Image (cartoon, rainbow, N blue to C red; front, side, top):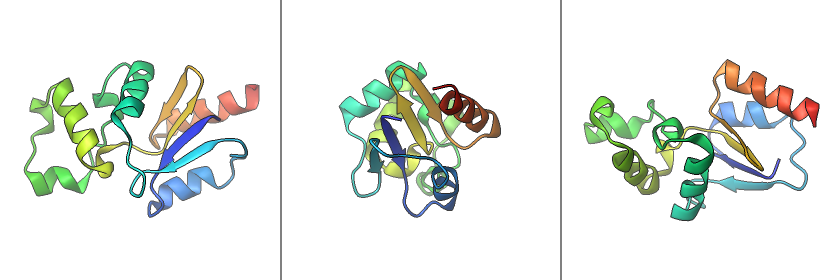
Length: 117
């Protein structure tokens, strides 16, 4: 692993990261060290869209009265830069490989990738 973006108060992030060997990996806690625009653009390049990086369960959506279905890619980018909770997490990056979020299929791909290396 080269980089992990996570939230320290997120029990799901802790559960996913705990068994992994993150030695030599840059671990970035996003509430204290928000994702920069350059980092977000790099994540976008790997994921193919800002929407793929967007946490559609963020409490900020309701608090801001956002209609996620009406958001454009530029809206997703703007929101991702405004508040850390909009980033789907955890995000694991290793070279040209990206694993976003905690869905079962994503975690299975991450585990398969880690075991193949």
